[in-house]
Amino acid sequence: QVQLVESGGGLVQAGGSLRLSCAASGRAFSTYPMGWFRQAPGKQREFVAAISRWSDGTTYYADSVKGRFTISRDNAKNTVYLQMNSLKPEDTAVYYCAASKFLVTPMAVSAYDYWGQGTQVTVSS
Image (cartoon, rainbow, N blue to C red; front, top):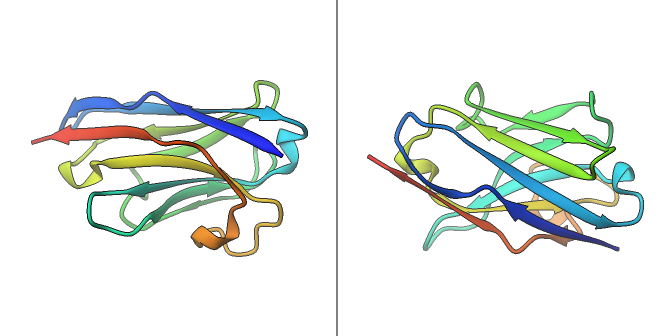
């Protein structure tokens, strides 16, 4: 079991940056591949980025954020990060981090077993 708590959301102007953090408690954080998802009002939860269990491991990105967002993790701190640059109004959503026991399809919501409560990101135009 792992508990996840996101932080770092807020209001930012278009073109600005934010860094989200997801702190994990529980055992064996380093064994879990991690992902970030987002959900805008009236829309389904969508994949943003994922990273394998190792700090220098494989990363995956949605096409909509590729080149602007960077996912990383620090296993010593039990934390995964999402650096978001060149933010756009369409990035406005609640952002969730998630942990997977056995990541087969990084972009699928169903691939993840544990979820945080989310943090709001609002990008003004």
